[in-house]
Length: 157
Figure (cartoon, helix red, strand yellow):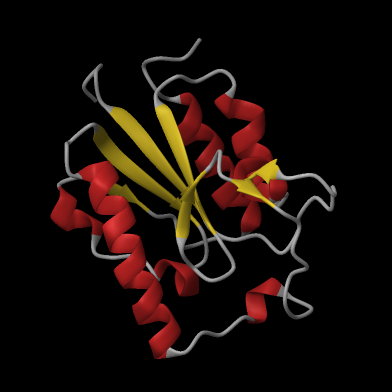
């Protein structure tokens, strides 16, 4: 990995969220397992930027201020999205990611989300970045993989 290249972490939406009345950055608002791991280990890392997928499957920067919104449904894993919703989000996300990835500042992108959410992302390979997307194993192995990925950067504090 080149010393001047950063890495990009894309966190999928989380059913679990902080209910504070005040606006919170997206990385703080959501409180699922991958968000807690990211918050814990990113403070020691300088080469990772984070974007967050919202409930509507569109991406925002991790520092975007969000109000509390109650999650829809009773279980996140049972969410299903129509082709139209996925396609609309994919178009929006392609524009968002193109601005981030077009200049080549990122060497790789890590997807911390379920497969159904990843369908709302464009083909990231066309941006010339390595994509890491653990899809097997349960939450534990995926959480360990995320921690290892965050901590293996060259620019750790």
